[in-house]
Length: 95
Image 1 (spheres, rainbow, N blue to C red):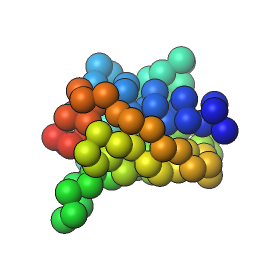
Image 2: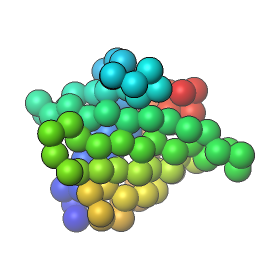
Image 3: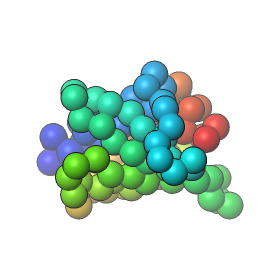
Image 4: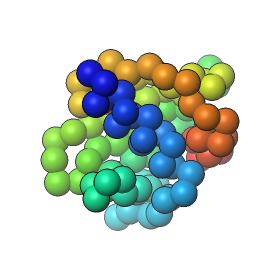
């Protein structure tokens, strides 16, 4: 469980420094520990930002909801919940 929480935290935090474009113009990528992830962000009417994606080359998926400095969701089928640092929240909310 801790491994997946750390993965999700890394996913949210990595949005800051490693954004790039993937094959789909709406998708972005980041690389962490030699693994590449592709994701999309969507802002919902209730103000939450949804970060949804997968690891390239595996079946690992994640879906995170960001609101008010808090991240909740699932990473590879496991529930995650943690505080996001302000810059990660700002980047995720801006996309």
